[in-house]
Image (tube, rainbow, N blue to C red):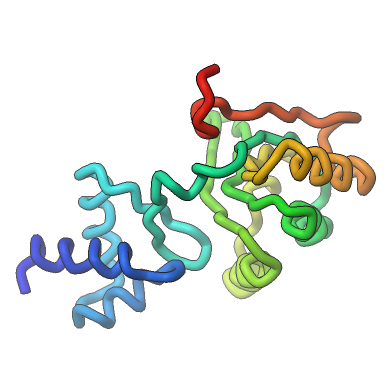
Length: 188
């Protein structure tokens, strides 16, 4: 199979997948190395396909994913030992964690997709961090970080924010909380 045909097939796999697909899994489907798939995905992205690399594998980010509800940004600060508590708090109160962003002194803003929609997703993310020995991005900034979270309604967001605030996980008293109008379908 030629590389161009393989990339078409990778696109089909991602479109039909019910969850993230690891590069190793995709590589096994085509009897090529994981690195070949990483390169193929890079070329697909360069061609305009919106492929996200989440902690559990590659996913396509459909435009309709955020069609219902609003995306907010929250500023959080806590030690590494409270990361799971923070993520569970968001999930348990009806939100979904889309990504994490830190402000690095050299690189500027660093953002990584998370796509955590359930406790299972959080547990998988935490397990992958533990197995790899990697540290979360917030370790670069003494625990200060931003999360974009998706909430089906303003009431759900307020519940998430209040729970985080009660647990002392927000950066300041109220935490930064702004709706992202360009993503919730509203004009400004």
